[in-house]
Length: 91
Image (tube, rainbow, N blue to C red; front, side, top):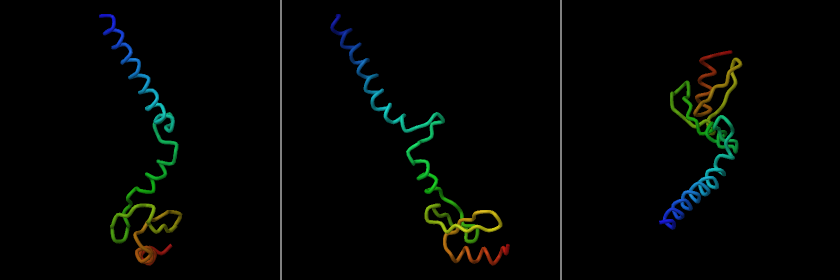
């Protein structure tokens, strides 16, 4: 009977120990707000899909053409769309 109790306690201790080891390394890369501190946020931002204001196609930010116009940033799927937008909206 005592052996069974001892085995159960030992399994519980091992469970929490392994959980602390494996989840502890995961949580070290996260700040207080739960955001990752190892560049994953930057990657997520670059993979965000944005809509081209001219042809209304969606492209990832990392491959979009960025233009500054009137103090604002605009993202386009191609240089042609950026030129079209600039001709339609002169500064």
